[in-house]
Picture 1 (cartoon, rainbow, N blue to C red):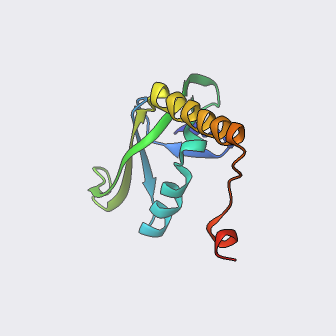
Picture 2 (picture 1 turned 120 degrees about the vertical axis):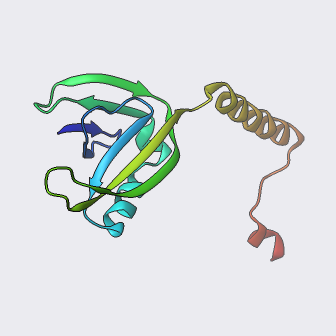
Length: 127
């Protein structure tokens, strides 16, 4: 099986034929699906590496985010038993929006600092 290496170093065994926007993983249970789902955070998807069965890097992608996660019960053609297949659909993060948001936060902080206004939490304001 091929593997997907997440930014945090975790390796996930994936079904062969994955694409940069669709990854299929066989999971033994719904709980295992949830464990895999939790791993697909934006931080872990900021850099993903597809590895061959022998561990050779095949491709690297940056700035992905989870678009959709689905769990299906599929009949195995060889054994006729059903197995659970999790499909994780990924999409590219719009880096322009991300940079604009960071820029706006920086501008807001600079304006507040220039005006001499300190940011306080809500709990400090109530005291």
